[in-house]
Length: 227
Image (tube, rainbow, N blue to C red; front, top):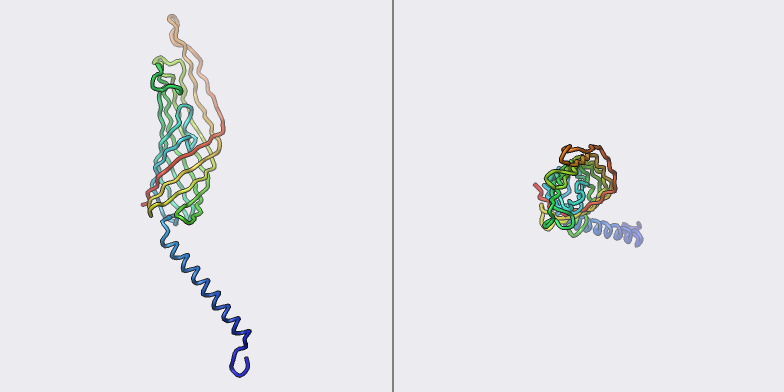
């Protein structure tokens, strides 16, 4: 600085700093406006009711002959973007797998259970909040062949553990619809009874305990209502 005047280099440097500061302030202001206008809700302390239709049993609670199950539950955000959820699921079907309406025998399958999971959300533009996480499920299953005098019945318990990935779309603030896919394993432990009826001896047959472990996949669509 000579004679109280800035050198051209210093003047250019100050101009660059001011320009950078203005750009930074504009970006911050735009981000704040976008956040305030966003319909997405993933803040700590937020809560929502859940209604779901599970096409393949999101919690591993739908078995053979049970392609659909219904669930109700709720989620609560423990921190920004991290939600704990709980679900109650139910499914019941009757009839054969091939022709449930016209089959003479009406096999009945009933499954109910609970599921607990964690979701990690990564909100994006366009009011979409993709997430990933994990869940475990516990349930009860009962099945009989529907012949009136059972020749085969099964009752047992189900445990499943899965990783999940999905998204929530917010058409309005406080309302979201979405979908989810799950992959993991499920274990079914139950008592299987076979009964053979004869004219002289009456009902006879063995009762045995079986455990089946298999790969479990799942998908669902859901509706969220925040409160």
